[in-house]
Image (cartoon, rainbow, N blue to C red):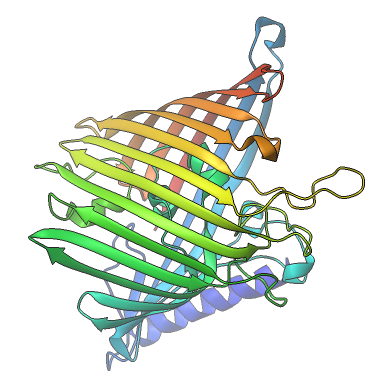
Length: 399
């Protein structure tokens, strides 16, 4: 808590000093507070956003009616600083998470400190379409994960993302785009530590290698619409982006690669993950589809008491969602997600059906979202089903 107070004090001092000493520009709601040096030697845009969430859950079945558990929480509370330094070709981004959900749990690998840093990287525009990123940020994995949590179509991401995504990591990335026969393509490649964000001890396993390719056969989306939920730009002509990613995490030290519990250091296996996804938008309609497949190269290991010491979360997942944005910026959307873990993992099958309603007041910067889900979990051996009803209501404010 003391570190957070110091951090907030420093951020506020920095913003006020910059605003008084420089020339503020582009101070529009949702665009942050931007300042630029008089000699144009640097710029900084400061943004803040918060998500306040109400969650209610109830087991299915008449006998469970009234057995409701609820929770109110600050789902996300984040500070972001971005701009350029020395030259517009040398850009940076820093994003800090202040909520308990952002911090994660304590662990020896992070010296039991608050896990505040989400993004901290520099981006060098070597050529018009070629960039080098260095630092900690999201890996070029599944589309739903790379889309900001501020810009989601539902209250939160799908089961597929929560089980199989490859998340943030520390390393170097290369991003490029060019036309092939008049069709736009995008490419990304990353070499990273493979242990998730903010690890302070020695690297426990090997490195991680991630590659991604995207094809946009109908041209670019308006305003980078392939990386935010809902067709807020109301594409006049159809737009489609098809993407595929492959990730190899050599001797992954955590059960989900970059996330999850750390496994015993004598039981590391390597993880191979494949993602295929698409985004389609036209005249208020939007469709997002994703498929994930994660496999481990070796067997899961047990200790003398038959307890897992390396139970990697592997298997397949499918997510399909679609929505229609009305002229008053009210959107109705539906989503289906399914999770099929490998039998050896001992984890259950899951299916989730979701209906969501969102009112966009100022795009994704000020919105009210709610969704209702039915989650079914099936035990792998006996085939027993359990069901839950889940209701979520969330208000997002970002400037």
